[in-house]
Amino acid sequence: MRFLVFLLLTGAASLATAGELRDLRLWDSPEGTRVVLELSGSTAHKVFALENPSRIVIDLPGTTGVRLANKAAGKGAVEHVRAAQREEGLRIVLDMRKSIEPRAFLLDPADQYGYRLVLDLAGAGDEGAAPAAPPVKAEAWEPKPIVVAIDAGHGGEDPGAIGHGGLFEKDVALTLARKLAALVNAEPGFRAVLTRDGDYYLELRERVKRARKAQADLFVSVHANALKDRNMRGSAVYVVSARGATSEHARWLAQKENAADLVGGVGLHGKDDELAAVLIDLSQASTMEASFDVGARMLKSLGRVNTLQRAQVQQAGFMVLKAPDIPSVLVETAFITNAEEERLLRDPKGQDRIARSLFDGIKGYFESYRPREQRPADSPSPRLQKVRAPSGDGVRAIAD
Image (cartoon, rainbow, N blue to C red):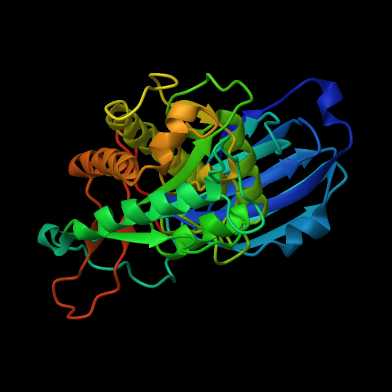
């Protein structure tokens, strides 16, 4: 039987000692099929293809795991997966739907992943899958209403900071949120959603959950700052820190089997860990860029109303900023513990000026970035899809 050897990687003899196959995952995409073998350690391996019928063979010397391998189901270009334990080690055979040249590479441990042997089988999707939807004409993409989720900080039994004149942060935050919502709703093509519209407490994740349920294009959390030093003053705008984004990335990946979890409109349910991680990374990168953009505009507008604590957007691990697919900012409108700024926060005219400055920043951002929705030209009542494309070259959209 004729065969072609496509890749042979051999390591030191010590690498061929007993190892274990810990997981075998397959996922399919328009570009091809990927097979991921998670291993207990680095190992010598051999990958080659056989013809008539088309098969790809993976030999893992000194490795066990036949039962786990035989549980894997075929997907995409791979029709079946079967394995056998041999004297030399584990042999895995991929029965292919057609002949494909494999590309194999070994990845070192990274974050929550161990050693992984990855096979990319490019250029073959699942022949049994439903046909792809026809392309949508350019004119079928139309502007969508811009949804701004406005979150009044604290509430109920959580008063937040309290000014020396008796002003509660929870009260002024709700007042400012309502004023901002009124400005948003008065603008054609905009719609505001308040996470809370009364004096009650909401869990932090519930605030983000409500924004995501409303398919918000922006999340703005309104607060007032506080410090023992009564001389401290100034407005500030925050976006999520790198550490906060990393921790949320891990949480989403751990909970990806929750069918309600989406990033950028794409469900994570049933996705391979590697694909889910890529989806989250792309969404977070786009979201972080957008958050800095709108945050900088809002900070500049606030500077016309009040002193700025810092001239740059700051970063922190606030829970409400961690949605990986919604640009999110937290605004510390002023120091409630500063007598002058407490008067600004209490004064209805001062509140109007703050709300207007926040809206000016929001509106300026959406003048540069306008969400669009997909409407098939031949459908009178389409299923709308929110699309957020990261800027920059070389970034491709990933969809279900």
